[in-house]
Amino acid sequence: MKNATRAFLVLFVFLTASGLAQDKTRLIIDADTANEVDDLYAIVRALIEPSFEIVGLNSTQWQCSHWATDNTLEDSHRLNVLLLGYLDKMSIPHPRGAHFRLYDWGQDVAQHSAAAYHIIEQAHETPENEKLVVIALGATTNVASALLIDPSIVPKIKLYLLGTSYDFDTKIWKKRDFNCINDIQAINVVLDTEGLETHIMPVNVASALTFNMQKARAEFKDKHPLLNYLYQRWYTHIDAGRYRRVIWDLSVIEALIHPQLAIEQIVTAPPENTNRNVFVYSSINADEMKNYFYQKMGKYFAEN
Image (cartoon, rainbow, N blue to C red; front, side, top):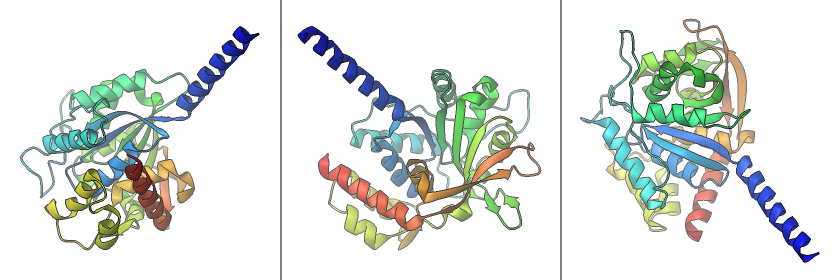
């Protein structure tokens, strides 16, 4: 009887653990981390989220920016390593992406990078009837390259990206935002890929998520080494001194964690792209996103 009870308990623990693992969202974050302040806030929030199983933190380029350094890709990669180190999560793969945007012409316009091949590898390792979530917080160079190199991954991926703008009244799209401009070819590859499940956070919607320096100082300063670093980022960034900032990238992370805080609509892709449907966020509850962010960050770093 004792053996039967023990066997039942072992089976129960195994099934419970398996269920918990299955409940986690398996994802890759692809980010231009060194570009602005918001990237770090979004990445740290994702890294501490218990419902996420992060299988990659890729770096991506922002070489077309007027503020670009000599090697934007390497700057982003080093910041990714720094964040993972602070959180003792160096076991998460953090491959480098492409140094530059897609090629404009040629038989192969993809940028072959470790990050692109990591997306391909993880997509193929995704269990049957599931999809790998890829969150593109910057230019979609690595994602587009992966799709071009191996189109067979299309049905295995669910893509969330920050970029473009969309007017729900006039139904007019624009691709003049930072992420699109840094690789206009790549965003068009993504939008042209039929069958790719695509969720878009337009910049005109994400712009509602505004933080102020006073609140960040009260919540972060001298509370934890990493929180202090996030606060100091306001001052060390090339765009230092702003009292208020839009924390763009966090809108995608919080919308994925808390779907009730954002509304999505099905929209037809831009007329110059493939005639297909994409999911586009039409509004976010910015106040609640901020509340959840500070609550979760405060609780996590108080306990760790």
